[in-house]
Length: 119
Image 1 (cartoon, rainbow, N blue to C red):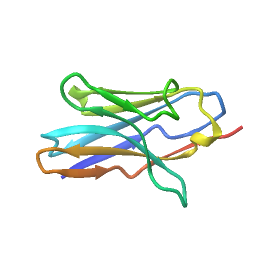
Image 2: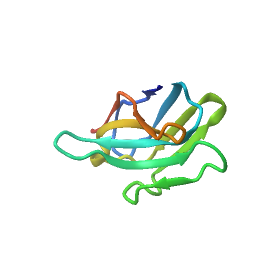
Image 3: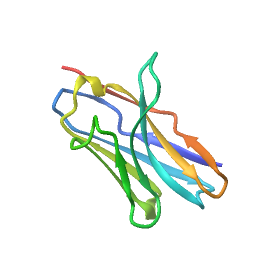
């Protein structure tokens, strides 16, 4: 089992910045991809960004946040970050950390952290 714990969600004004962190623990061997999704009530969970956990750290960023959000990792700390800038009210959502473990073909989710963009 892999546990994911997010932190960093907050209330921020439009145009502001925020950084989220996700720490993976437990049986993390074979983790292949980590990333972030977001969801609002009544809507499907949507991919924000992913990064490969080993190797060169290839990233995949959703078009609606490209240029404003960046994903990075610190493999030594088993941590993935989401740097969010130029935040808009429509970025308001619960942000979930995600991990895919190749060794067990398993997906894991964090408990979510609330990001609210409002003046």
